[in-house]
Length: 428
Image 1 (cartoon, rainbow, N blue to C red):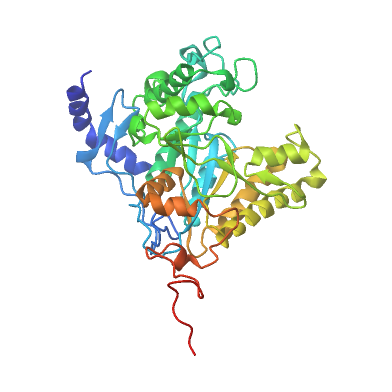
Image 2 (cartoon, rainbow, N blue to C red):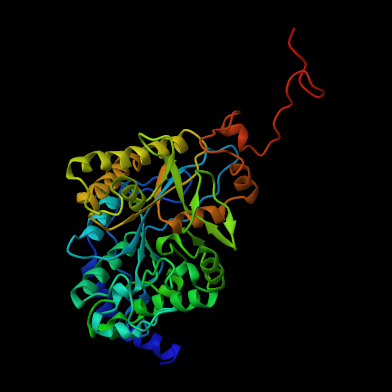
């Protein structure tokens, strides 16, 4: 089908698609700040309206569609001279999909209720049914291999519904790729740049053809063009970042979050914003901990995903208090964005899910805080004066400007200290 035919086809079915998308929208309560705006705030979150019929154009087999600009994705604002930067917090989810735990839908609601948007890293194989598994040809593995399995028709339908709603509410749909291969046996850490390009292409393809692969031809499409929507990712087990970033740069990505950083302002690597997770104070310990639920679990119960029930409440509180300590250190200090990573899992009885929700509820409604997706954060960073960002990167972990934010980010030169040539004369 040519591009002209595809647009024409999309126009013919626009009314049906718009009606279907409208049926997927839900009302929202609470407020919704203009997340990427440096000082913006919102009076109240409105229900996501369906795209006008004239803007709904199916893409390919109708698994995805162009429906216009994403709702609730605000235009970023450049910091004014002397303006204190907002405190950004990013909550992100690896391998996002909806299953019987219904954690995707739950955290969508948590975000709406707390002035937040989030990033959901979809695993492409979650849109591929088990019986079509051989369509996946993972690099350095036989066709149909996946360390996280595939999905069934109900799981795909449920995940598609959450993806629609999440995007319409301003959240980002990234990728966690497909088979989740870690370690030395063909793991992603051994993949070449070309292997990564192949994996990215397949991850996109499963999202763009889920209707064909499931036979659900009458289902509503995902309301975005995934080739344009997909601008960032996190690699499985945080492995293979070097070659992935080279591939991602060539394929038009704008950021990566597969590494480990300190709590400082981000810069670029391989032409991408390096928005990696960070080390925060580990409550009760003298060392720092990565801001990811899996790493807290490993440091608490080892490889046992369901450890000692008597310790679980403490473990959850430990993660919560560690994340809050990292937040406060940045909020009162250098205002570096805080990046938090999670999985939709019930490890140790679900204590990490409760910890994340506690943190969302504790920080996202504070003054000057913007709980945003990586997409929104990248937009904001791109909108800033490069000299301002370079100055922000001179601040160390937890370091607030000694002269105050107004002077630190002023476009005027700092006054000379008294007693040196050019300084104002001392008053008698």
